[in-house]
Amino acid sequence: MVENRPFLNFLAHLVLIVGAAVVVFPVYVAFIASTHGGNDFLSGIVPLVPGPHLVENYATMLSAGMTSSGAPPIGPMMINSLVMAVGVAVGKIVISILSAFAIVYFRFPFRTLAFWMIFITLMLPVEVRIVPTFKVVADLGLLNNYGGLIIPLIASATATFLFRQFFLTVPEELMEAARVDGAGPMKFFRDILLPLSTTNIAALFIILFVLGWNQYLWPLLISTDQSLYTVVMGIQRMAAVADAEPRWNLVMAAVILAALPPVLVILAMQRLFVKGLVETEK
Amino acid sequence: MATIDIVDLKKNYGSVPAVRGVSLSVADGELIVLVGPSGCGKSTLLRMIAGLEAVSEGKIEIAGRNVNNAEPAQRDIAMVFQNYALYPHMTVRGNLEYGLKNRGTPRAEIDRRVQEAADILEIGPMLERKPRELSGGQRQRVAMGRAIVREPAAFLFDEPLSNLDAKLRVQMRVEIRRLQRRLKTTSIYVTHDQLEAMTLADRLVVMNGGLVEQIGSPVEVYDRPASLFVAGFIGSPPMNLMPIEIVNGSNGANALGLPVGTDIVGVRPDELSLVEPPEPSIRLDATAELLEPIGGESHLHVRLGESDHTAILSVPGRPDVAEAAKFPVYARVKEMHPFSRETGKRTDVACAL
Image (cartoon, rainbow over the protein chains, first blue to last red):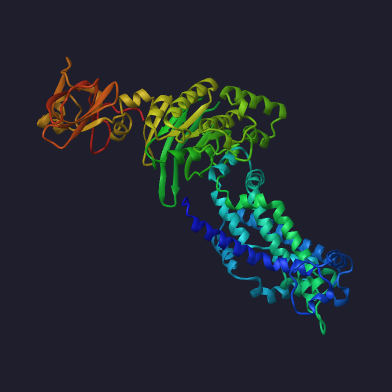
């Protein structure tokens, strides 16, 4: 790692620049598209320089949306997405940190079995259990409300596993010192474990928030009522119009708007996020 | 301020016994040191007293109250851990206050005790710092402070100095001793370092294999080790343990006035001398193997007679002994410790155990 060879430096930078370009280019195209007028796409050539309709497009999106093509205004959809993403992230963190606490710090029968059952579900994507889950949610009368959007996604094996791994690195003596200091299990959890987990919680919040925000299939199944559409599925509706060209300028404006909240969350919590992933000293 | 009474205490991990029946009475204000090699059960014993390990059998009483099933917090004890176990996200003050807050101690009382402990331990300027900003010795002080502010019936120390470097360890050892004298709090201290044990203890408890080998003041334990194990464990360099045949040929123990049944004789390295003492002594033929000068004295390793048996002598200064030189060494009969190989115990008047 301490080698100083110009060619390797060049190569490393080349790879990084190409990688960054590959990631950024589609975002750039989307942004450029959102600054053009509705007819600029009929030619079939994708414009690569900004057009004059930036303010107009975004204003349309924010006020009326594409009501003509069966999608509700973007504002309420973004609120729905926000509620869902925050609900999923907070719910997952609360449930998984508590289950990890139970698995690591309490001795109860079938403790290891419980852990491995949680761990094995890591390998099952949501899609595998989507039909039975839908049946359960429907029977519970949770279709078309926030509960139905959030609750089925709220248990997370990944987060439980990560918290377990973190708790295992906390020295056992801390728990014993707390016991001697007169702290019961929940007091220990609140006063010692929770403050120590802040950076981990922040890192997980970002990951889970983005995960929740980007949910597509599940909201599509659960919400048939326009007032519950999330922005990711809304975009799909805007793009899928019958017998006409999609209004790409407006669709792309929606895409850019939809991408903003996760970016803002990451920017706001970036330092905690990195710290949570790399910090080893406890 | 309290006595601690332990009666026939046992601890099994599954079918593996860790502590196999220990009885011990700690007087009020006494500092007891549990010492022994790793795996001898001393830490387990301490953790049972603290309430961090369940008791398999037997009884623990603190201040006359049976605490077998009490939570650690209800036992009125404070513990100092080997790695200090300070709460990393709290300031030093937060660390000191935590136990008191949990007990609902009034604010004014908390402040008074924290101030007092900070004065005693000279950690006043560090009260608002986090543990990670402190050095090892300072963390150690904070860990002690956390115990002091509680004003408990007993202090329990679990190898508190083993994470410090050698110089600091000596310094903190003296401080712990001074502090304990000043506060007069009953204390139990676990260590594997026999020097620490000798210098700190009012009474030593030497443990081996989950059993107590000997209980006594450091001087008693050093002067009259009750068993072969204690004889070999306490003292540095360790006591020379020699079969009787090497010491006195075929004449046996009786000829030396040692009790019947003695077949191993122990002599401390500093009781072997190169010059013949005026008192009755025996003469052993020795061949020099190695001379280790360690400053004011030297350790001389010798082979005894024609056997493969080796012994160590502590001799003052730096004697001019060439390797493979042959010379006599003398051991006074009075300073011989008689042991039986079969029972592993002393064969003269048994020590109170």
